[in-house]
Length: 319
Image (cartoon, rainbow, N blue to C red; front, side, top):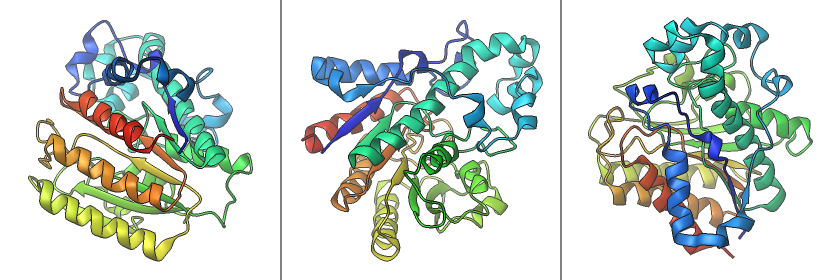
C-alpha cells in the first residue's frame, strides 16, 4: 500500500522560547520525524513530499471570509485564538513570521495529503495540521485555519471530489470536540462525522454538536477499555451503514493520553496506539484512501505517540 508523509522542517513553531508558555508542544512535528529518520533512515526519502510554500490567500478564501483573514492582523485577536496572552503586546508581523507561517504551511500540507491519498488510494500523513477548532469566521483553541474544510474545497475545485455526490468519512478522536470542522460543514452534508471527545471540557459547542453524525461524548478518566470499545463499535457502524467513502480523514489527536494536561481521557501509550491501529486497519481493509492529521497533544509524550503510530503503519502496511 502506498504511504506518503507530508512534512516540512518549518512546521515547528519557534518564538524565541516563548512558545513554551503554552502547553501545546509546538516542536513535536520535528521530533516525531527525527525518530522516524532514526528508525527508517533513507527509506523515508521516497515517501516524503514537502509543501512548496504556504497556502495561498485565494485558497484560504475558499472557506474563510476576508474579514476574518484581515482580523489576523490584530495581535489581540491572535493572542486570544492562540491562547497566548503575551502575544497581544507583540507586533502582528512578528507573530505572522514565527507562528502563522508554520500554520499556513501545515494547511497547505493537509491539502497535499488529501490530493495524494485520492491519487494513490493509500494513506497520506500530514505531520502537522488538524486545526479542528477553526471555522470560516473564527479561530480558537490554537487553531487559525480550517485546513480540513480547505482541503475538501480544493479537491472539489480540482474535480477529485464531487459536491453533492462524494461523502467523506471524518473521524475526530482528539480529546476535544472538533467544533470548527462541524461548523464549517454545518450546512454541508459532505462529511459523515464521527467525533469522540471529553464532554466535560472545552469547547462544549452545542450548535456544532448537532452536526455530528455519530457523537461519542465521554466522561473524564474514561480509560482504555471503555474508550476503545466505543470507538470500535462506532467505526464498525459507520463503515457498515454509510459507505462507500472515496476518502477518510482521521484527526488523531494524542491529547487522549493520561499525561496530557488538558484532554482528561486517561489512555495509556498502548491505548493510544491501539486506537490508531483500530481505526487505520479498518479504513485500509475497507480500501478507503485516508489522510491522517496529528491535531492536539499537550504532553511531553505527544511526539513519541505520533512516532509509534507511524512506525507501526510503515512496518505493518507499507508495500
